[in-house]
Amino acid sequence: MARKMLIDGELRTEDSVGVEGQYDFDLFVIGAGSGGVRASRTSAGFGAKVAICELPFHPISSEANGGVGGTCVIRGCVPKKILVYGASFRGELEDAKSYGWEYGEKLEFNWKQLLHNKTQEITRLNGVYKKLLSGSGVTMIEGEGKITGAHEVEVSCPDGLKQLYTAKHILIATGSRAQRVNIPGQELAITSDEALSVEDLPKHAVILGGGYIAVEFASIWRGMGATVDLFYRKELPLRGFDDEMRVVVAKNLEGRGIRLHPNTNLSELSKTENGIKVITDHGDEIIADAVLFATGRSPNTKRLNLEAVGVEVDRIGAVKVDEYSQTTVPSIWAIGDVTNRMNLTPVALMEGTYFSKTVFGGQPTKPDYNYIPCAVFCIPPLSVVGLSEQEAVKQCKGDVLVFTSTFNPMKNTISGRQEKSIMKLLVDAETDKVIGASMCGPDAPEIMQGIAIALKCGATKAQFDSTVGIHPSAAEEFVTMRTLTRRVTAGGKPRTNL
Ligand SMILES: Cc1cc2nc3c(=O)[nH]c(=O)nc-3n(C[C@H](O)[C@H](O)[C@H](O)COP(=O)(O)OP(=O)(O)OC[C@H]3O[C@@H](n4cnc5c(N)ncnc54)[C@H](O)[C@@H]3O)c2cc1C
Image (tube, rainbow, N blue to C red):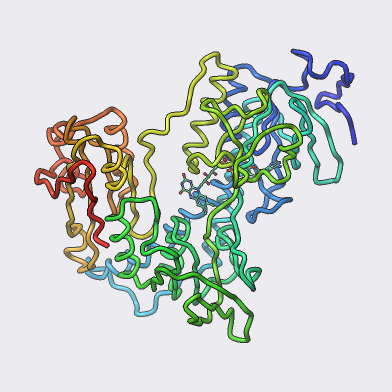
């Protein structure tokens, strides 16, 4: 192992390590995903000398593979959204006929073409992120980082060489990894990593999970023509979202031909001549050619040596941090999915920026988790900001006013598609403040981003009502919901439609 081998070829003695100003770097970041790249660049912008290490690029992650750009760019948000776009054309083409478009009876979808284009795009983005780092003056090191001291990181390079680096601050930004369910035959299943890169598009897919990744893949594969069976443990998918919206999403998934299996788990997978035999905990059997486990993710901390250096983790292995993202070791910080606070790309970006401001910018800043909007890119999508009805009823001291609007999107009037859009506003009766908004329908995420600004500014229902709509649009419904749907009294029960 090379000790204190420095980037510039400069060799420092053991004695100098730990002395202010004598570290190799001001900041050493482990993991070049959304959070790590953002924190590196903003810290360098404040004048810090920064290094970042990341595993070699590969679309499918493993202990040995990753890539600059991280989950979002290589095996998360970006490739997923590309596939959602690809899958959405099916409905668009069906609807197009009513708008006068004519095409032959047989529609062909070329998965390999889309896969190739998707891989090209994420490879391009990997290059863009590398350029962003080098353009900011950040030193990039390829290899697996492991913390060996409060100010020391050991990097195992792909060629087997181990290098030690010292830094005044270390930032853990190693993200999370898809989890597998421990049932017989689990090795036959794939995770979202592989699902984004399968060689052959499944004809019949089984998906286990009720979270956003599960319903998104159900929409993707169904849109591309596969038969899809979606299994989840609860009554409805998307636990944690507004119950009324969960009902709508379930209806829409079914309406698009996805077979839902609520309150059902998988108990065994086995290989047969015809495909993978899936046995449920109700004893039912299905043969599928792909089984996707979308059953949660766990923080990437196992191989970081955290216990030995005194960095505490919680029950699931997430790094424990304070409000400024500082761990139990003062020189070591952590941001993004590895801390399991709110596992979204924009949140990792916010935490990365605020870490830099706090440590190098002289402006201690706590991330603000209020009114963070998010979306589920099923088809049609769901998007929300603020509280769900269940949360609002729990958190409000007084009554909660619920306004809903369910309507046939204008496009469907001509195409005849039987799929309603729904919007919902939750208002604190005492203050008139809008405390939650949700929408399920075309363009919901695009609309909700603007609504999120209003909620962040503390907009009241009266201010929503005094805003003039854009006509004709679906979004104008958000400013024309005049009639109260229901009033839930303090301590009352939200309407769940279950
Ligand atoms: C299928 C899928 C879809 C998603 N869709 C969305 C979405 O639509 N919107 C949204 O906001 N979020 C989405 N997410 C979540 C989003 O991708 C994450 O919240 C975000 O990437 C977290 O950023 P991060 O920097 O914490 O970690 P990551 O982006 O995961 O980056 C961590 C990096 O650390 C590297 N690494 C790990 N261990 C080491 C080590 N020891 N040494 C060196 N490098 C290491 C990894 O290779 C990785 O590149 C999705 C996730 C998945 C899986």
